[in-house]
Image 1 (cartoon, rainbow, N blue to C red):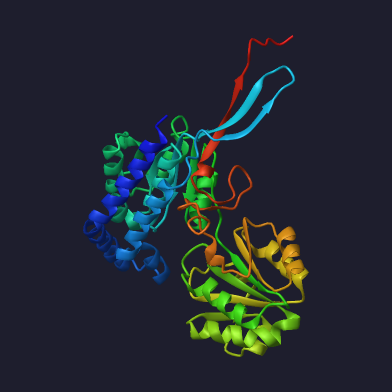
Image 2: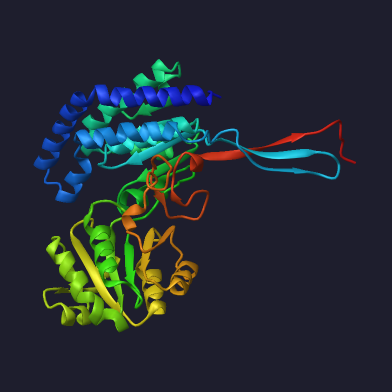
Length: 397
């Protein structure tokens, strides 16, 4: 196993490479952006794909932040002594070889590889065809960082083709070499990986995230959170897709909140109650409640009370991230106890659903399942454990 110092050195060197090769990365991204435009990708997809100086700097800073985290390996997670004198420790170890399949966002190349290096895992990256040139340029920086730290360059590999058949081969024919697969992308990708993988999968479905305005919500705070949760970046999985408002506070909250959203460029699709309060809203259909727009569109519904809000989230949510806006801590506690999503917030934007914002340096994705990892998947979540037992000659009778 590599040392923590060597892994951190590789991350710092890769960070420096990203900064020094920023012009090459931007040139590669320009090719991807031009080809994506020719293919008619949506504005949200183009936003995910686009790199600029600030996003490259964010990738470099992210690698440095990951390097600054405590070493996730070798941690004694639990320790106890048996009556017979045996000392037992549960110790953190790498998962092994991780296959990561993702779409569009080239920054995932740096984030995912950085987390795998930090946690002592080897990784096989398969980025989307849209970001092929950008991801290759970023991968070259990561390889250079590994080599400068004296670590094998093959620790971070990238599938060198955009052929979709490569994904099928990785999922079904490499079980002997790959220990776990992590998909990051839309529901079609996630569904394909879950159906075809012959190894364990850590993944999430779409991010149908809710903001619920409780009757005890502050009006100014409600508007600020709703606009940020929806409009800060509409194309990320933590963007709010549905706004729920208590009936008893609808007249007080809805006009101001929806006006703020409209002024920010958001299209409102509401139920009949919402349309009555805000005639500019379009009538929502049943499909709207279960749609991940990834665009400047928000579905809005008036609910009778907190129980109805919880029921709506249970029926239509994807288990990703939900927010309650309220000054009633008792209501927030009830929301936290009864909503079964990976991330729950009180009085904060859903766009904080991010490993970097959680202090993890970065994330591979937000896991919405219940096995192994849940919520932001950072370096610590990319470890397993083994038992180390120390004795003094004990034999079992």
